[in-house]
Length: 303
Image 1 (cartoon, rainbow, N blue to C red):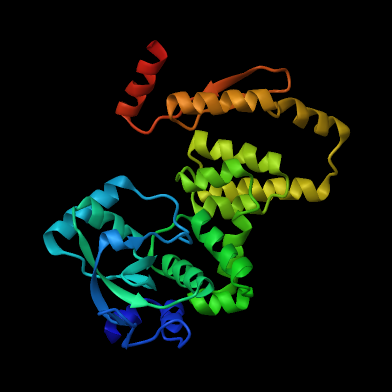
Image 2 (tube, rainbow, N blue to C red; image 1 turned 120 degrees about the vertical axis):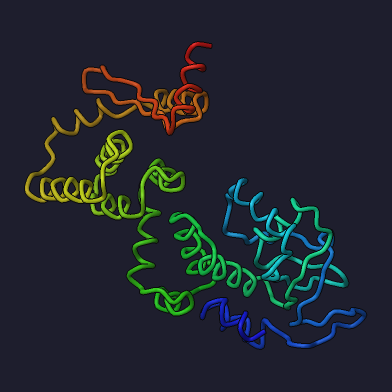
């Protein structure tokens, strides 16, 4: 039991050992299960956690985990909180919970805890940050929720998740990037390194322009850092003229064109880009990930 608790990470371990969130070996009235123990609970009696910070689950990864669970069972129990007699709510372990349903299990092993909503949110966010492969934006959102909803300072948060404060600051800064770039991070089009280089550019239009170059030309992080340094130097040494502003306005996509871009992306299920110069001329770029993906796109064009 102690081995598993230590493996949860310093932040979560401290939360679970807090007397306000964990009543060890306490039997609730009218119930046969001990709070703080590992018990087998019917899946039908567990509801999912509304505070779950992870919003996307890889279907293939879930199916692989389901296959492993069929063969070996659940090695790491999920964690639930007691809502009432024979009624529980998931605190952490949603991937295992979902995979168990896919595997056809009717019951799962679980740690039972008592926690109020504030403690539950904190526990769920800390465990997901510590143990799941969240994308950088999900981590950033989790950090922001811990700060905003759990009234934590960045210093307190750094202690809970065992991360440097500068690391937390870098993640939070990602949320200031344009939405299109944030989506690119979530979809794996650019890395955290690319994003950190883009953050150093203050102009959102330039950020988006460089982001498109990254996607189109497969630029390295070093390439983007060099471009970012050049853009920053240019901004610091020259003021933006009215002509520059007009040119930016001309090259930016209109609301209607952005809607068209969204429609194209939906049709081709790809990160379609529209590059347009100040004269209204340009090109539509449809990237593909493999030969099969290219064939799929060509079939759509022929339809």
